[in-house]
Length: 285
Ligand SMILES: Nc1ncnc2c1ncn2[C@@H]1O[C@H](COP(=O)(O)OP(=O)(O)OP(=O)(O)O)[C@@H](O)[C@H]1O
Image 1 (cartoon, rainbow, N blue to C red):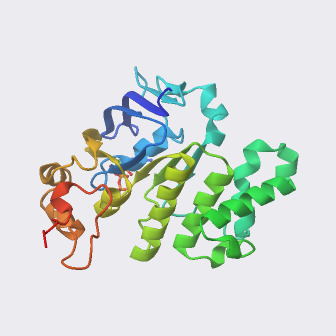
Image 2: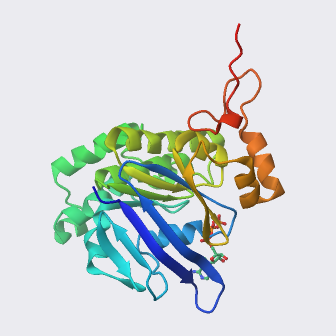
């Protein structure tokens, strides 16, 4: 089975600006749930946008492959980029849904690449597509909101709608760029749980960039960390050390770890894949 995502020797600068991605090399296998972390400006969004083809890497030897096919090489998009587009679901921090349309119509947009263009333009989605979309909304706990205008939904509900759209699209890979950055803690948790569920139950590969390390600890089994555009850590979530975190975020990083530490008595706030130094120590009774 080829890697779902392969990034080889990718560099990126915007115009004559500083280096934003510096010799990135990554391989992500099918079914992984990967957190992309790093301080603000470290290049997370640019890497996600380059992987999904919204940006091109610099000219040179850099190459990106999706599902075993080269989509970008030498700073140029190749035909495979377009052909594979329907298999990649992209979720952003904001502006994921067309606010004047109903949630159901937004989710049906996920089928546009799979029906004749004229049907899509007229909004004539087959009944089977509507059923698929409604099932996807049910999976993310939003079926009762199907007829509601997207503008009337909360940020967290809109993000779950965007996940339903990716499910309807039958995406094999979801790239989520800070999907919980503007959400309250409960909505953020719900969105991360939803991404985790479709990763586990449907085998969809997920790459999610996050500012909140505790969500990475809880929901992702692998962490890729960027510092100044270069990969500073790539390994298991359990394996990331306080030194790694301090290297990424400086002194404030240690506070982030402290915040992620399970609180006394009330269970773990960073269960899941949290490194052992964050897990509660079992006390023999
Ligand atoms: N379109 C652009 N034109 C010029 N510079 C850009 C552009 N997009 C990003 N950059 C620069 O690239 C660098 C990395 O930005 P990027 O948004 O990828 O980082 P990030 O890690 O996602 O940051 P944050 O966590 O704050 O969203 C920043 O210095 C940013 O100013």
